[in-house]
Image (tube, rainbow, N blue to C red):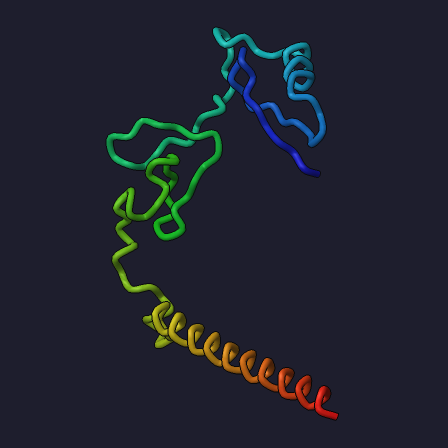
Length: 137
């Protein structure tokens, strides 16, 4: 099931919307079904994912976790360089285990690409030779 979401303008709760459904109808149904009054509501607010960056007070609807330190951040601080990820400077586990680094992988990918390019050039040359011989007969 493909679901989108919006926030209720009355209670700030998340209202799920099925694909193809009108968001206005979904919010209206939510309000008619007993949308809690914001003054008396004890329900959880929609934006409950605060940014972990010191001094940032932004909250996101959906948590954005750093893949290195696994802390939630806002859109502005989601990248490792933007939140000065403490784990980003350490050696990745792949290098500690003796596996090849990203640079080595890029070099080998370039070598494979070069080999493919040479193969393609040879195939083109063979096709031209066959076409030339076919016209000579």
